[in-house]
Length: 127
Image 1 (cartoon, rainbow, N blue to C red):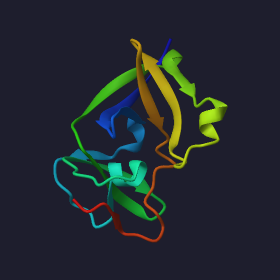
Image 2: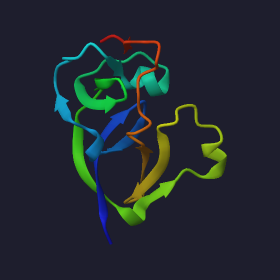
Image 3: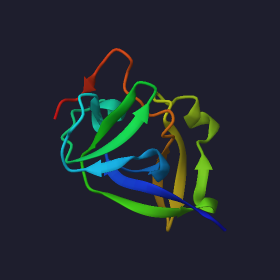
Image 4: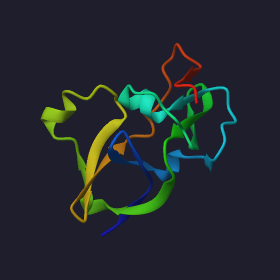
């Protein structure tokens, strides 16, 4: 049985995981003009980032602000599941793609290829 290494963090009252291969860097300070607070981008609430993940989309590098520390964890492949159809039909952000259940704990999975800033904005959720 294999595993997928993920950057895991807590935000908006949930545990989240993003496959580590999509993350270029993890920093404690904002260093790019293009950025978004995770809570603003995915949860429609104001963000107070303390950590910054550097990701890359079609327009280049940008930073995703996390409200907490992150940890690098291998998630067992057998614990990863796509969203059930009822949930998938109601997801507002295309990056939310699945769930992981490890030790009776739920983690929401993000597709790093779908995680991007809105096209009309250079930054979302100023720190």
